[in-house]
Image 1 (spheres, rainbow, N blue to C red):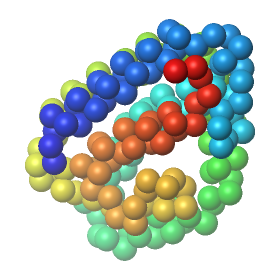
Image 2: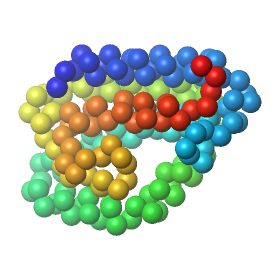
Image 3: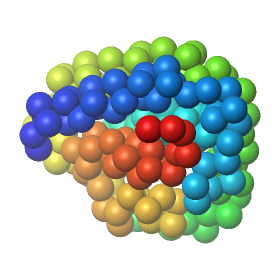
Length: 170
């Protein structure tokens, strides 16, 4: 894993988020995004939440990665079975999270990315190779099996995908 490349991408995302927030007008924030039911403000929150969720995913990999393979396979299957409620909660969560102002969301993203930088720097190579099975129906970037290194790369993929759905002025 190229740790430096991951750190640099996180920083590019952080800067891009701040630029988006600084340039967005109130009318643009209320406008619908492209390809989602969220407004731009709600989708901005969802971008931040994509980074936040990584902290929980890291814990899951550290736990399930030490257990026998069938345990995480069954856990992923159980999560896949509740995909519909997950998508409802995911949608409503970003609707509610969108009530947080974009400037507060930018500060939250700063905090999250700083935490992820420290976490990645502390993680050993053996841990980066540890992995578990994931619910592939929950997110297009979840693979059937993901390592800790994959999870560290995930938020930038999620960010890039959803950033393209924003309908803010360039």
